[in-house]
Amino acid sequence: MTLRRALEVVGPRPADDVWDRYARPGRWPEWSPQIRSVDYPEPVLRAGVSGTVHGPLGFPVRFRIEQVTPPRAWSWVVSAAGVRLTLWHTVEATAAGTRTLLAIEGFAPAVLLYLPAARLALGKLVSE
Image (cartoon, rainbow, N blue to C red; front, top):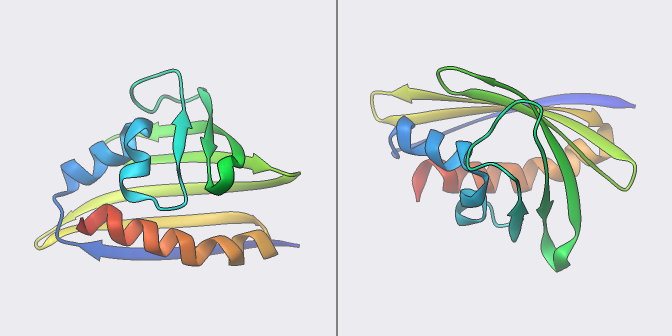
């Protein structure tokens, strides 16, 4: 069964800084507690480029950047253990900082399990 869910998180960090933290995969462990390291051959996101995120206990998750859309949006497909998820991200400036939106689609149990971790990571992305 496929499920699609969305999250919106707001915080005080400036949108350009939030985007930089997103657009540079090497920075993902700074704000995403579930990411220990990232293997990615480019300094910034680029459509068509693949990499690997290493989670807790070194668990590898392959990903491929699908789109990077100016000014601050991107999408990717992640896959591990036969489960595939598609995620769409946007970063928008607000008067008080940034709003980031995430839409995620895929195998329903995986989507539901990932949402709390995503909310925590996005909160750190826009705040810390």
